[in-house]
Image (cartoon, rainbow, N blue to C red):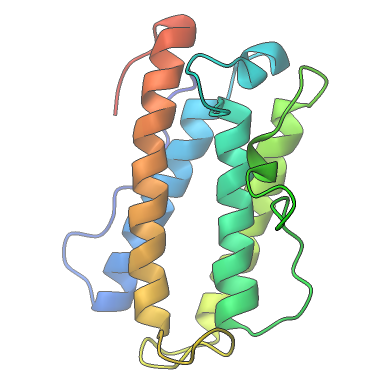
Length: 166
């Protein structure tokens, strides 16, 4: 596993900086846990579900797009790999998929999410959805979502090559 170059969330900051700091820490954890594996290991199924390292990173990429670009920013036709016909589409990977490319796509999507977040206040309502969710809710939800999947990545990485750590 790569060296730990993650930036710790700020210990004394305002609400936005603290929440953004925790989300960025978890985003960096996703990259750290997924990096350095072969494409085959990234696609390897170690549990009965479709959960793989590559699939989790693709899922988190789609979730970033959905919540920041679609919900907060109100953009139409934001691409996702899931659909009504294939609700688990983002988890589907093959040994031909390139894990490095999947990680690069995730990092680029996270940069886009940060840009969207910069344009909105914490109290602003999301432009799409039921109109009740606010930017703060999305930020907290993304911390929960990304943090939960970091735990999954941690377990998968240990099963794949014995790497352990935060």
